[in-house]
Length: 173
Image 1 (cartoon, one colour):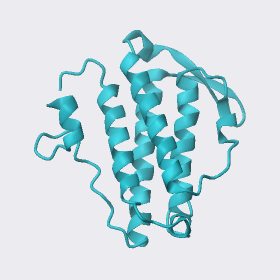
Image 2 (tube, one colour):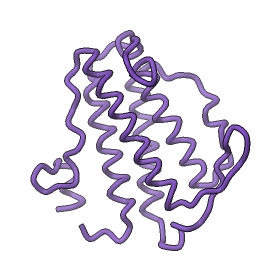
Image 3 (cartoon, rainbow, N blue to C red):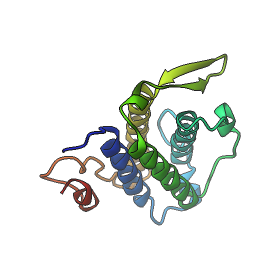
């Protein structure tokens, strides 16, 4: 694909997949969004809030914002449209962070505040972990969407030429 920084396409894919996933919620009432569903988290609302919170946590660590676990000190966003806007902002921040990375940044260590201690991790390890976290929980959201009677959207039409989403074409051709 010609990218010198492999995290840029992953960040763009992440933003694309989140946008498509939230698009599948169009017309869903708050009660349905927050209804009990099967999964690691008890609802679409809880699952997608978790994704957003973890993004905030790692974005704070990556940018050395100093908030640490305090990013979790927020209420559950029950309005999926408001949460979609917040997630899109976080996705943009992550993509912009990845765009500015240098080869030297990949081995730079940043603090991650854990429940019992603060540890440092390499940026080059945090990013794939964060992208995998997103994929993992979007899969759970797929099950919850199906349980709600909503056809889960196709999220993997980004990298391959054969079925590349229109938005990805502007980045990959």
